[in-house]
Image (tube, rainbow, N blue to C red; front, side, top):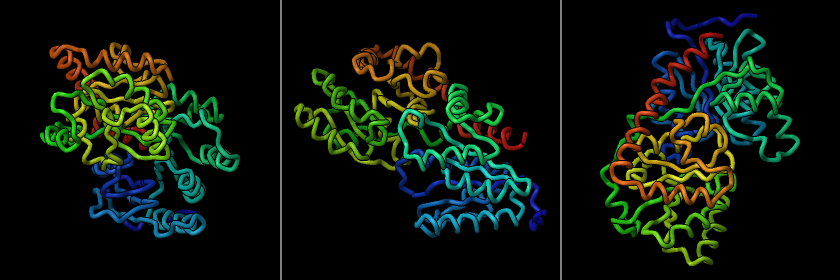
Length: 376
């Protein structure tokens, strides 16, 4: 059986399935739309968004469809209908970002008729116990798709080992950042005043979901290490550990050393990085953290644990600022070391990070994406 291509378009056709959209999204999903806008220069894109609001723009796509239904059985049926429409219009390639549901649905619709499905996943799910049904469905997704796409060679080897995926079935593509969007913002001085932070105080920035996976349980110890420093910890994020972290800060009498600002829309984050002296990434689980690229684009040094793909992608000379996983004492020492850099050393490190991150600009990663999609 062959579907008839009803449209004449010189660009290769691609159905891209994104998990969500919101104008004020505070998650890394907001970066997807920088990427979609970039790859639409090379592809005719049928964009399906599983959840969220209808975007006001089309990001260069031919079609943009947001699923109506939230109830899982109805969403499953609607997703199949949208994919069948895309397939009927000649979209034989599907690329799915972080959705087991869409990965399986796309494989059911596309692959029996000669189509190809890529599924992006970049994390360390094997570190956490999952329910049997979720684990089964995750493994089903990896088996069903044509290719898995992940961020680093080390992660690819681990996915292959844990889930029994042939290494030949796994493509490597790094995360990206829009260097044009993450540029210094002149409002940092006013933001400090707004947050009640002394203009000469140093700012340690945490930009993550407040969960144990992202190191929320270490924040009180990190804040306590700053108590004798002219420094404030700014926590930009929300999540299940927020109240327990606040209570711990209160019990340690650290309220004056911390500012909880909640989930900040990603398009406002350049302002927060402009204010920051150090970004902290105390995660127990990571893949290819986008906040690391955001900070580097702004020239802000970061301290992190050696988890996921972090140690693989940073410059070799920067590994001195990466602590063993879970070693908060070493982590805090690294933060203080970054504080104590001279002005010249800070400027040199800032420029090194800006130069390093250029390889992950959205336009360059889009070229890698083009290679992956068109080589199959």
